[in-house]
Image (cartoon, rainbow, N blue to C red):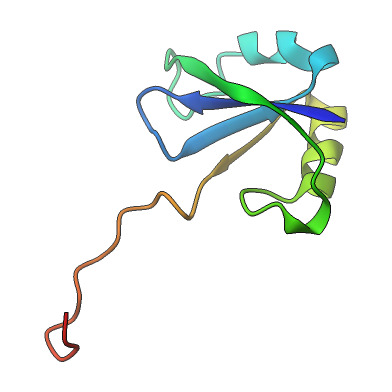
Length: 89
């Protein structure tokens, strides 16, 4: 499967993944975290197996089959908290 990956323009940590046959599912207003948010295409990526860092491919495939898309917030792009005062920076 080739995954079509999109990123929300407003919430840069929010991603939506689908495949070629389900691209129309992205027209659903409930796909974005807030209705009306635009999605921008990041790219098309082949399967990488268990090594994929951003999302679980098997879970994404099941979600795409059942609802046409898989969406998630990227943990790697979340803002980092401040270093506690007791830990050297």
